Length: 293
Ligand SMILES: C[S@@+](CC[C@H](N)C(=O)[O-])C[C@H]1O[C@@H](n2cnc3c(N)ncnc32)[C@H](O)[C@@H]1O
Image 1 (spheres, rainbow, N blue to C red):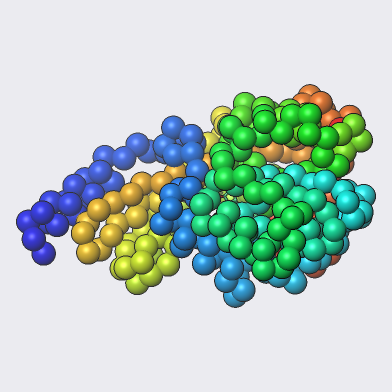
Image 2 (tube, rainbow, N blue to C red; image 1 turned 60 degrees about the vertical axis):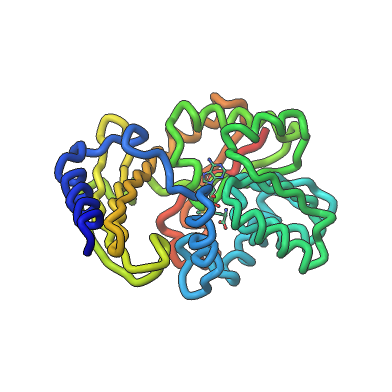
């Protein structure tokens, strides 16, 4: 090890020692770095890995979910759907295969590239539009587009502050036609882990790097915000360089979220537990809301 590397490890460890405890949601990090080009390439591998469903669900589950959307959102060929945080377009493309016209928004460069390629390979590029942008900027531009339906799935809405979430829901409502429907998937408040904990692991290669790294992580539950934050200290074991990433997960009790949907303009909304038992491995963790403009 050079003196410079020694200094980097030394400084990383002192930064950890001096960290704020407990971490605060949004002040100590607001999301994973999905839009970082290298991280997004590594995350794309996780989305496509069929041995787990951590980033996107596995293909057989996606097909069951799309069948469910078809019924719940009253879809038919020719319908227009907005897929908010569409990732690599696994739902978008499947909907397009079934004749739907889909617009996907996501800020991960690797995912949007993959989504475009997939739509072209499947011969449905003419039914897919992908927008690479932060939804907090891009959703407002969809106002008045009269979509028949919108999706905001796999819990992604809960990384935003309550105020941002309300804005996003108002914007999504304004993007729908009257009577248009939206599916939002959030963790079941009762099942969110509300304890503080810490964890560490090492790997040669994975989501956090393409060479040996160590992750020192901790989780806090902020009672006032009703929000968890996972903070990851990711140390590159060759250079000692450290990245600190905070991932908030805002909890909503079911009644609170249904009231929020009404306050944001939706005329009716219902909560479905455990994905109506369509057969998803982690279905019990989730509440799926279907809201109508
Ligand atoms: C858990 S993945 C789910 C992707 C997709 N819905 C699926 O289930 O396959 C969350 C996605 O949200 C995207 N995302 C997170 N924050 C975002 C933001 N502020 N603007 C746009 N996309 C965002 C990420 O890039 C990622 O593709």
